Length: 366
Image (cartoon, rainbow, N blue to C red; front, side, top):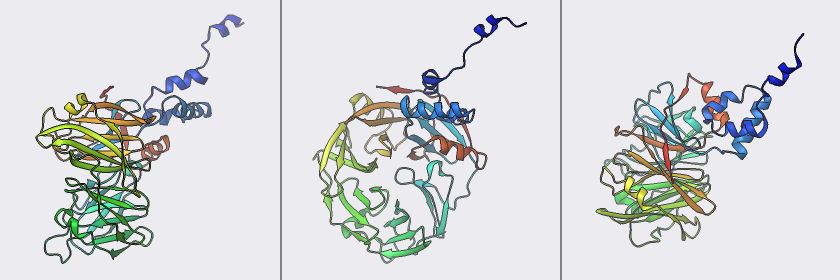
């Protein structure tokens, strides 16, 4: 005969708000298998992500040998093991999560979460060394960066993902002739247009793939003390980030929201000085690199990127923190940023032996 007290001594199962609170502290790569335990656990995982600790965009660092991701939701680094891909040329990034490799014979590119799918196409007809490459909706725009022996160094070609064909269009504006490469230009794109900004002068043009035309130049210098600037999209907003001062003495980093119609700028934040110092601790600091996804911007010093300053747009203001780059020391790093959800992790685990492992780096939040 079983005593009635045995039932009383048994622990009640964890459920409801308590379970959701516990799950809010679990990295998303571990929430993915947890959601498969039962329907109740799946509901708890979904509710926890929705109400307790929402997903935040990952910051991805790629080298020739490794891929690491920083998840600001859980403040952990994740090592991603994946099958190697035989690229014809060096992999580069342009905006957000767009990766590409361009050679004289082939263009390969990927823009889906975690880059599970790569598209391959013949190279554009114009041979290029360092062009601007960007995804605009279902098109890939390749502009400028042509080799010296080409007739038009400002040539622009569009690859249509639906027709799988290239077409030529209006060349880049003549004002960009001396800087028509990704080295000197910063770009941002949405589903409709490509925006191109000269990093040192702030001269900005917009390109419309539908009409295949360029806009007139705009002066994107809301502060005369800006000497270097980059642009990117954040949740549909065009954002300008400018270095204040000069190359010998960077005194600040400011952020503005830019109207895509009038190009008027509204200041939205300034990097705290203690974080500005993190970008210049060990190496010359005269330029910046940025990766945007969602409402988070990642800012780093391209010279080495030992420290990454992160900014989240919250309630009309900015929340700043820093994280040490666990991959620093490798000079051939490629940076992207992207939104990653439970389904993206599930899909990745089901494909080509991809695995996630916690690395264990902590961020310093302010």
